[in-house]
Amino acid sequence: MKKPNILLIYTGGTIGMIKDSKTGALGAFDFENLIDKIPELNLLDCTIKTISFKKPIDSSNMNPDYWIKCAEIIELNYKEFDGFVVLHGSDTMSYSASALSFMLEDLAKPVVFTGSQLPIGDLRTDAKENLITSIQIASLREKGKPVIQEVSLYFEYKLYRGNRTTKINAEHFEAFTSLNYPELVESGVHLKVNNDFLYRPEKRKKLNVHRSLNTNVVIIKLFPGMSESILRSILESKNLQGVVLETYGAGNTSDDKWFIDLLKKAIKKGIQIINVTQCSGGSVLMGQYETSTQLKKIGVISGNDITTEAAITKLMYLLSLNLSKKSFKSVYQTSLRGELT
Ligand code: ASP
Image 1: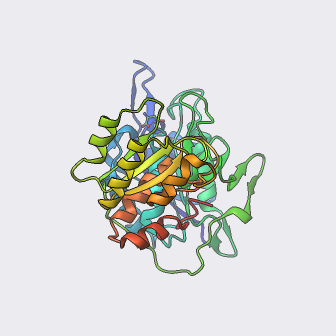
Image 2: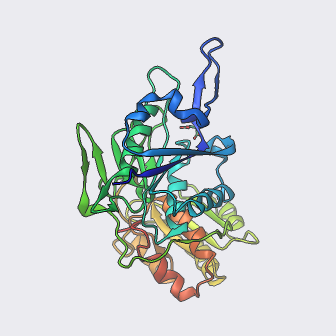
Image 3: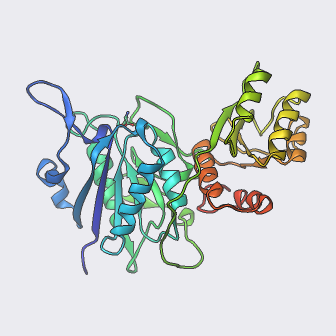
């Protein structure tokens, strides 16, 4: 049987850096000669090609133009390759994995995001394990079909659904978590695939790449003491079309009249407001408490158990589709790529 063909896409981030043995300074790693630098890759049962952003970026500079670039690289190479590993800085990796999950509709091949906390050239690096296992996972096949057929994220012995992840630690090797959805694969002595949790679209269609994202959106995190005038000026911003409102607990907010009135006015103007919880895990349940009943009445959309990263990228994606007001709500509350329960 033909060996799986894997494309490594290097976008930037710590993983791609190497310490100059003389000066100790971190510099960009030469991905063209990846196999020479990491001979262990020769032991993998797949062929690997690499492609790199011309100017690799720190993922703090990530933006929708780069997401489009990434999606186009995957589209252009979709036929030739069996799987894709995207090397990416960890800071915004969950946003990128979420965005790509929406942009790559009817994806039927693995796209594995990975990165590392320490550069690949560092003695104690976590980059090698993350890279090698990501490539192995992207190569997994069963009955001639890829095991993973979705955008995922591998870090520190776990593969997660990409749009379910959040970065939780800036120091630990275990930098990501997925509190509302189980791991897809656990890496120990063997790779343990949790088959029941893999994403499988009902019908196999051709990959459909969406290139348009609407960035007239904002995330507003509630806190006790939020000022009416500041909230008003945000909600009255000229081009605003969508808001992810990070609320308390199970989707609760203040029920002060001024607050509800401001939201009501924004919704009337056509702004879509999504309710997500600021808790790391759990779900929004509007109507469970009096403090969220009003939100439901005025037309706030429930994000259910979606992460903020997936909520904002889904908002950008759906706003670009120009759906009617009514269908926007029902499409947003539907799981499109397994991003909510
Ligand atoms: N600042 C870096 C980035 O996100 C951190 C990392 O690579 O993990 O690009």
